[in-house]
Image (cartoon, rainbow, N blue to C red):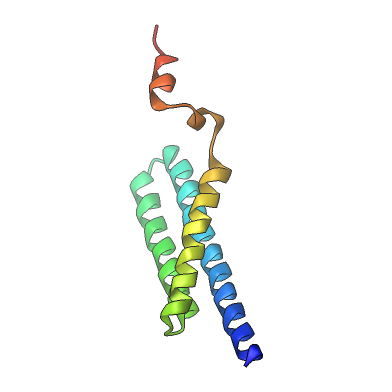
Length: 109
């Protein structure tokens, strides 16, 4: 009985980690795409292609992670959301820490 419970918890933990990896790919790819599209003459193509690729990877990956079990899907989605928070924290620039009004005020004459 204990082995079955341990296996179930381990499975959910692995599903959460896999969701985190998928989230890191999705949101890291979004960050990379926005940065790349700022200097590209074909920004719309970059954004659209990236959207299709990121959505395909995320949805396909979560489908595989879930394996037909809602508990595994929920664990994967939790990892996905936690990865979003991590990517936001890692990619934050020092200028983003100040409130928008202060950033605008610093450019006033």
